[in-house]
Amino acid sequence: QKEVEQNSGPLSVPEGAIASLNCTYSDRGSQSFFWYRQYSGKSPELIMFIYSNGDKEDGRFTAQLNKASQYVSLLIRDSQPSDSATYLCAVMPWTQGGSEKLVFGKGTKLTVNP
Amino acid sequence: DGGITQSPKYLFRKEGQNVTLSCEQNLNHDAMYWYRQDPGQGLRLIYYSQIVNDFQKGDIAEGYSVSREKKESFPLTVTSAQKNPTAFYLCASSPGVGYGYTFGSGTRLTVV
Image (cartoon, helix red, strand yellow):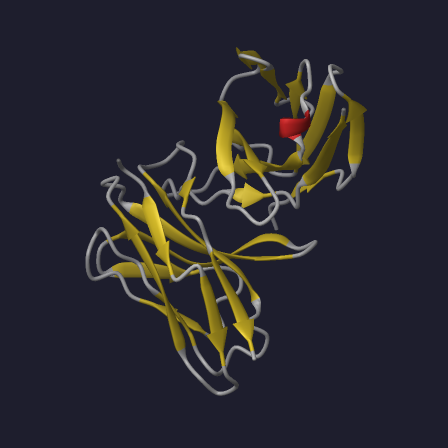
């Protein structure tokens, strides 16, 4: 069973701080990694994706991938109250035939306090 | 604008009733998915389809059925065999391997 684990939180940070969200995955052959943001009562929206080891930056968001440790993280700099949401980590495991089914973690709830 | 449309937004089902949730996309994506989300459970895959006229069971397919007669459409039927259907249902699509999903806005189903 391919699994994706996230700390459910809640994670609480003050406005302006760096929020660090972590995710581990069980399938060593996983190829693609995604972070989704889900506001309460809404559907998930894709905010970052990363395929290679290292860091990828997009505005205030940085995704970090370490395939050797099977670890992916999301950093949110200068956190804002509008960043308060549940963040879902999703991983695409390697499968024969190239199925693109993602495996989702249960999400980490982030609260940014003004 | 391209996107995925789910309808209705809210749906109420009586005991023993079948209901159908609609999912339409105009993104020209080949793959489409249905997920169920319960509090504290994360997203669980019900069915997926990688091409027209073909679909596969996901992790929790019992009590559900789907069809994929057109590339744009992937409706989900919640049958009376699904004993605990109250949940938030999400439809998603993807252009192919290695790409993330685009989600619809969801349908919240409640049994009354």
